[in-house]
Image (cartoon, rainbow, N blue to C red; front, side):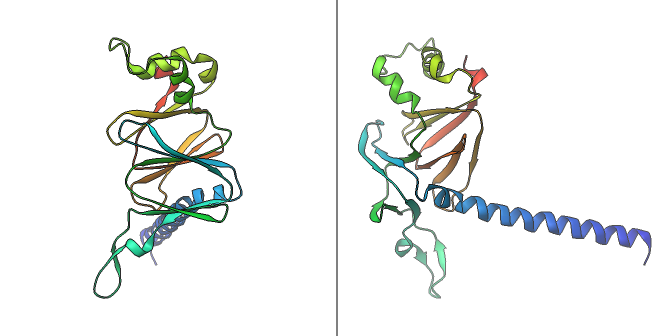
Amino acid sequence: MNKNRKKLIAITIILCTIFFSGCALLQREAGKIKEALKGRDAIIQTYDEESNIIDRIEGKSISVSTEDKFNTKDEEGKTIKQSSVISLTIGGKSMVHVGSSLILYEKGLTDVFNEFSKTANIQNIDRSTPFLNRMVNDMKNITTGKSKVILIRSQSGKPLATFVGNKVSYFATGIDKSTGIQIDGKYIFIYRCDYTIYDAELLN
């Protein structure tokens, strides 16, 4: 076997290893939020298009999954479209949700938007100063030392929650129209929401 062929085989083996490791990593990421929330305290909130809170639930041992009975299947019974209905279990009790924006976040995380809205008239925003810049600068005691700002919005684009953290990562959850975000070791699950993750320095 010549040297070029040996090199080609070695490269192929390395690429295959990387590929399959990547697939395994994606599978682990998809299940991370479900595993991470079990036994932990978390808050679930749903919102209307104006970002008003519809309901708020606090609980432990939370899991999130799709409601598979609503999957679209072909004649052979294979799933061709995953359900957008989600099933949540909170301390052994169940909740089914579809449609409106929902966020689920672990206790220990501070929703900066909630704190800001207590002290500011968020309906009367000076357009010369972008809303998020104004909020970050007014809440420096909360955002000081944090390197990322996550702005979450309703489907109509209205801000509904804001979180800050030093170590922020995001990943697929395996659930349609949702994203998992990790902030300094705490988890957020967002469903049917828009979001943007900024370097804090962009907003100061």
